[in-house]
Amino acid sequence: MTRTISLRSLASPVLWVAVLFVVLLFGMPQLGPVFGWAFPEVSPPVFARDSFVTLFLSHAGLVALASLIATLLGIGLAIFVTRPAGRDLRPILNALATIGQTFPPAAVLALAVPALGFGPRPTVVALFLYGLLPIIENAITGLEGVPAAVRDAAQGMGLSAWQRLRDVELPLAAPAILAGVRVSVTIAIGTATIGSTVGAVTLGTPIFDGHAASKIPFVIQGAVLVALFAILTDMLFARLERRLRIPSVGPGA
Image (cartoon, rainbow, N blue to C red; front, side, top):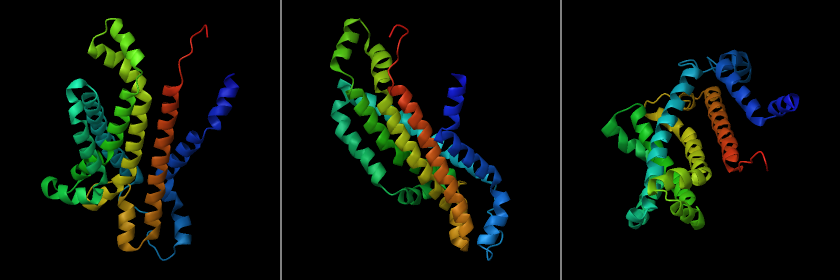
């Protein structure tokens, strides 16, 4: 059994994507000769203004902060508009969230920079606005998808409104909510690259520096790491989502 599990783990695409990402993240400078051979006119052949580990940590921090705020606020708003007191505000919430996502992130940055200055803060604002809609939509779908019979049974057991939400509705809605968070975070990873245009340190820094200086290797290095980061994160969320969707099986089943 242990050997079967080990072989299954070794065959997991998540493992190999993670290994490739870590190897490139730490070992990109060692690929200098390869990039030098492919692009002999570019010197240096590997982006060296910041380490790729530093770029990744800053990039991941911006995504994590914006996604955390969007998740907490998005779920909170979804809970509010699915209660009797907030149902009338649902169309307004949907309209505002839709506007937030359809508004180009570059335009959000342009508007936020005069108020917040250059650096990570306007990037967090753009990522937050851009990632809010999928979380709100999926959270509402998940909460409204809880069967009425389950709600009635919980109420019949004497559970309070808060207990029904905490112990019944949120656990049943968790897969749908996580699916929204998954989409939001994946979008944020790609969108965060444009934060480098306003002074944020991200994996987009070598991409924009490469474009500005006509150094294609820099663009390739940054783009590959951003893509692997997004793919790996999406795969991890997909695995967690599958676990939430699998019903628990008791010993006697």
